[in-house]
Image (cartoon, rainbow, N blue to C red):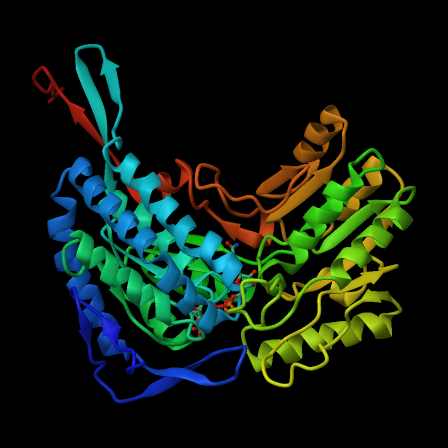
Length: 482
Ligand code: NDP
């Protein structure tokens, strides 16, 4: 693969320095390609190009923008196999997941917001002769900064509502997964999105900072860690940018004694081991009622042990490789911490035998955990599940909420009244009843507390990519008392 360049003004361009960084396949530890690093000057060039793109794009009707975005979604669907394979090479996730979810959910998102582009409207206020109306206007040039776990999907979740509302976007994918955002830019161009409306700069935290402090960017939408969110919010304050933050979590998944245990086990497996556990909304604190705990653990362990770990390009693989060696070390460190803290290892617990290359970790379950263990309180972002027991509804709600995070939660019960009651009491932006990690575009996605600010997807995203202008219209003369 050729060196990956920046995508500015409708095509690939060279960065203004010759600094490059490698992007590496987590399953083979081999370099896929070198990537050109954007300088502050390149970020400025991308912003200026987006300002020009914005002029053309925002002058179109919503219906015209919608038609173009629908074409982009169609092209994305046609390129599913190729883009899913690239995503697997870059992230290490299993191909079965990438084919089914990553690209297609990006296309779903673009179609959803394409449909909404023509429906943007203001309100009318009758003021007794005079009247006022509101216009929902775009913000201008927006900035998207992505994490490495769902690179293409994140680029779609940010760019689709931004573009549908008439904004332009400069997007920076994570340094570890640069490949597919550039392909999305190609798709937008082929669909007819004007040059400059979606530019991609490649680089690291410094590149992200250059975007956050750039006065020409009106809004930043970040997906990343809580610490990064705090830094971005602090530096965005200098230019009072709008900010959307999709951050980390340590979400509870609660299994009551009347739950369908097989269903709850299926959800716990998906909520901890899908994408090797590198999912922000994962239900990593699994609270199981003490009366069903033994049964739950037995069924869980037997299914977790059968999960197939290995080559992410093999359609039969369930668990792929972690994103980087540094992340592998971090996840193994949390496993050691759990052992030393006295949690009981049920299955997994290290690197799988026979896989000498690649940053693989076995699906790992710890039982007999307590709320204060460090690996129970901190986000691991790997395939490590902590099982805890509880006795009463009030107790489990208090313990589930006892965290700085508030992204998601799951409740498993056959008592619907209890399901709704517990959902209302949980401090989380998303609560699933009798399922987990289903994220349709129609539903708002985002966190309470330190898990984030603002919402992606759904009608709610429109609020975050537009600003409201009120226009007062006088029908009589101005009455001046002097
Ligand atoms: P990071 O916070 O490390 O990075 C996220 C992005 O921000 C990257 O593109 C990164 O660049 C960039 N960045 C880092 N520092 C700065 C800075 N100071 N200013 C501007 N940009 C910066 O997160 P990860 O990529 O490690 O992703 C994992 C995290 O993302 C987890 O905490 C996870 O929970 C969260 N996440 C949240 C989701 C949600 O929707 N709530 C969804 C998915 C993940 P670089 O290229 O250098 O990494």
